[in-house]
Image (cartoon, rainbow, N blue to C red; front, top):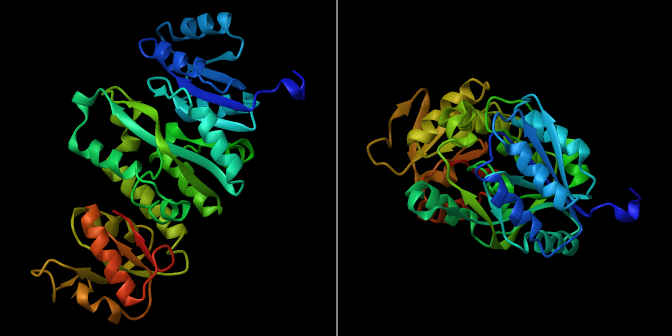
Length: 339
């Protein structure tokens, strides 16, 4: 294939036993208004007719390509598919989801308008709606904010700040980082490593991705997506990032997530110096050698160690941001939201 014929965008899908949802997913790729694309589907050891589904699409449209493995696992399958992608931009996608007909066009346009960005995500909508619980709705609302790249970077330790299957990434960046075999969410790990390497990620403020809720999906079944695994991922990247040059840190908020993070950071040889709390019953206590002080005393913290903010909801974060400003702390510099 000559350079003139190479697709501008490669859609990468790793699939296993996805024959029930794959036809709709591939149709949503086929109806893209932007036409310079290829779709590389890695059938990772399926026992159903997933490969035949892809073959039927490829017979009608040569832009679809099938790769087959004996079962590498999702990380190996994605990295294998990435090797075959020819586009200068790589669109990540899942075999059970749907993409808006303008997804590739609008995200490619966003990267053209922002050449410093290494990638761009989009807003999402979970379906079927009858299965969407309060937790998913809250995550959807959080993702579907018109956030700046700076805000996305600042909030990267809260949880996955952009939906993995919504991402359009520059090929050279994704090849440089790729997916790694980890025992926590590999998608969040990828983004955290990209941020650590200095990459900038933005978001297209439109719902371009329909995200299927399925009890059999990887995020629902794999131990790598347990709450404990998320905490270990967060702690590892905090220790390698904001806490790299610090053996101690301050912790704001000592609820369930804060307690779990503290224990995980102890395994990273990082100790909690002071706990800042709004719960009146804890103020004045000493928890594991860390004195508990009130939020009003935030500005008195000494020495100026990094502050990790573990608060449960958006309203609390707004209050904490005001307190940080009054205390002379700067989010993304010496203060980080981690829950």
